[in-house]
Image (cartoon, rainbow, N blue to C red; front, side, top):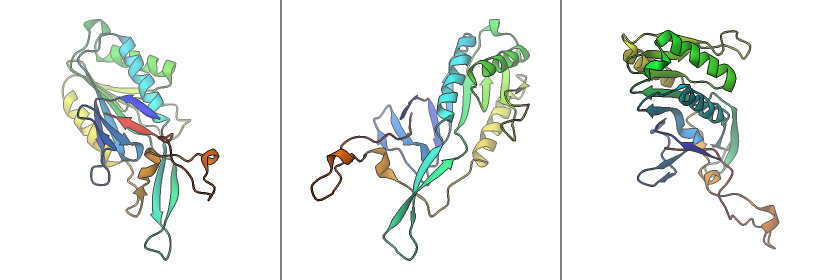
Length: 215
């Protein structure tokens, strides 16, 4: 599965790199991505907020990650393991301007909360120049009554709050164990049992159904 194009992808450059680079577009595996930032020249209407939440909702469903770990008592063989349902990629929005019709930071907060209830989406944080910074309230469990609520900060020190929130989200994002290596071939090849050779070998023929992010 390939995501829609994202403006800025923050990934673990020490462990991973892009799968493909096309100059204006790079493709990253899900295992590498920590967060993304959508940049908007202007928030014209609530529709843009709704679309951002819908996009985040789709991306948050991508959670299963695959790695290879060394088998016991061998230097050459590895085992494939699935990371299971891990923490979702952090989502941020950076808007350079906003339509005055959206109101002040308190009115924008209420509009975001309303759209969250409609779309079931989630944004880690949204910075709007001249309006403020809006951050999703952290929830401990799925039943937390504070899920879907937004903490709003006015325009004063909003940019600094955005930076601190982004750095905090990245610092708390769980890293995989050092022994785990991403299973690269899953991003390119898939097995077709119906195309087995007579000797029982598998023919690889097409891109796998895999989770990738496009920058």
